[in-house]
Length: 325
Image (cartoon, rainbow, N blue to C red; front, side):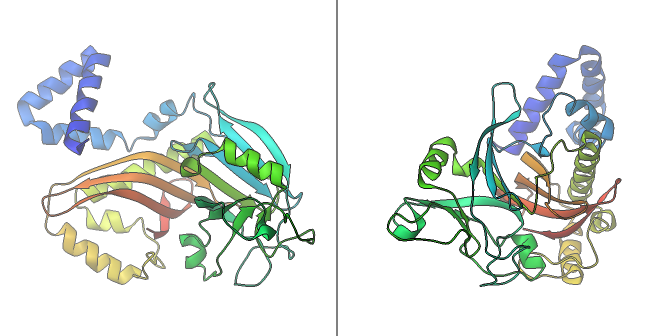
């Protein structure tokens, strides 16, 4: 669906919901046209009050989540892998908990061969069912290293969730993967859709019941960032970025600012829509959050539709973007 069509549907819904507001919107549209009305709505999405109300009845156990139906949490301290499913009550409920083997060495993975299981937020990129018998009947490949790992200079690869050997003996630890017994890995396979499953690996129990107040302020800041982007406010836009910002492709803050300044100076009219937003606190990192969403971007010279990731540090009012992809 085009961004123009989405905007038209938003307007129609607002008109149906509130007749008083509808009269005001129609008058503004009659007097000033659609652009000023669109700008007013874009500004409305930056208000904390809007997000406070929106979050009232939403389960924020793990953060603000719009696109995950399953969450896997790995607690390295007590060697467990837990699965939470989004249920008919619109909340994440513990479905199962499995004993798990993790890396031989405790702590966060930093480099290839350090025998540590990473701490962080990961997606599952694919399932492998034809593999060496040492890994059991199947394995799930994770997205380690993610963009935040790369920003911090971490390397390595091949972090899987897999089963246990069908023909060999093994020690009670891994080289960095997460291993559960074979009936459990087969049960897990039946329980999740890897396209909408989040994996949270932490050193201890995964933080739950995230503050709605904090999430409202992050969502407000996200839409302030979007507002400055749409309306070509170069300095306001760049104020959201850390001076140490490095984009996923290595572009630093200075070059990124030059790049964005050239684009903003064109004064193009843009439409930018976010959906499937997820805001998750990053394990073992104080006030660091991962934000992911589907972005629809349209201007006279460029169109984009795809997934976006921001790593941010939040200071209770606005956030600072550390890296993005």
